[in-house]
Length: 95
Image 1: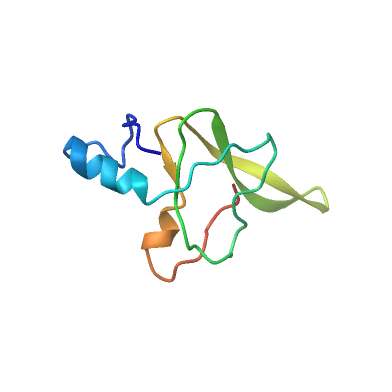
Image 2: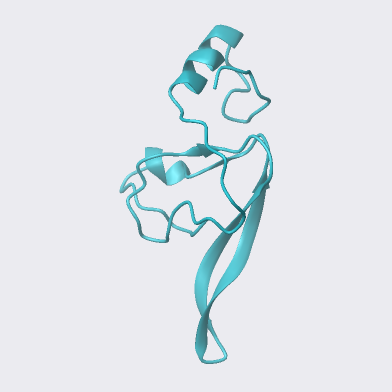
């Protein structure tokens, strides 16, 4: 992944530094509905969305059953998984 993309993660970096950051990543194409991480899981990576959208949800008990409630959606250029760089390195939502 060496193509420079518009992203909040890379916004203030010079092009060479942005390329270096992108080289740390692993490109992946995911099917709709794929779970990237679960609430409380080890946060060992963050995700730069190139295109598509990611739903960030929180499990809540609704009418006697647990359901994933949408908290926020992220789209191309945005980042999810910031817990990877903030102790205690546990995901606080599901994506």
